[in-house]
Amino acid sequence: MKRDRRVFMIHAAVGLTALAAESASHAAYERLAADDPYAKSMGFRLNTEEVDQAKYPRHTAEQHCAACQLWKGKDGDAFADCSFFERSTPRNGWCKNFKVKKAAAA
Figure 1 (cartoon, rainbow, N blue to C red):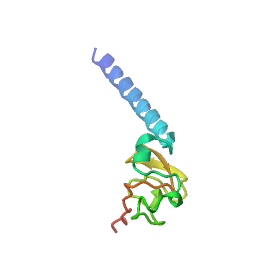
Figure 2 (figure 1 turned 90 degrees about the vertical axis):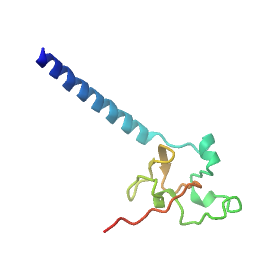
Figure 3 (figure 1 turned 180 degrees about the vertical axis):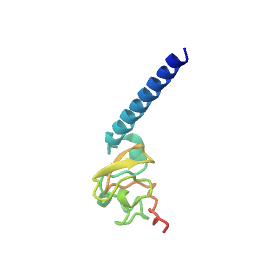
Figure 4 (figure 1 turned 30 degrees about the horizontal axis):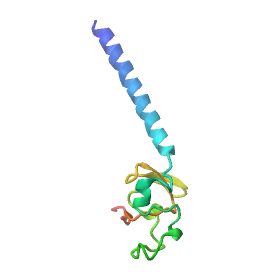
């Protein structure tokens, strides 16, 4: 009886791990659409150069997803997950929730 329970628990753990991995990899491929209503309300643009400077006067050209602490990409990634939108955004995108990426502590 104990062996059956142990085997069941192992299979359940393996199944849940596989399901979590599939879910995580799926989320990595979902790109935020420029016409998404919430993204639009946050001023999201696929390219930081397209931001309306009159509407967002604090925006600067240096502000883009790859320079934001909420963007989970690495050097060279064209798209990566954004923890704010929970979608993948382009390296050169922008939204009004931009947060300057802090340097890693030495």
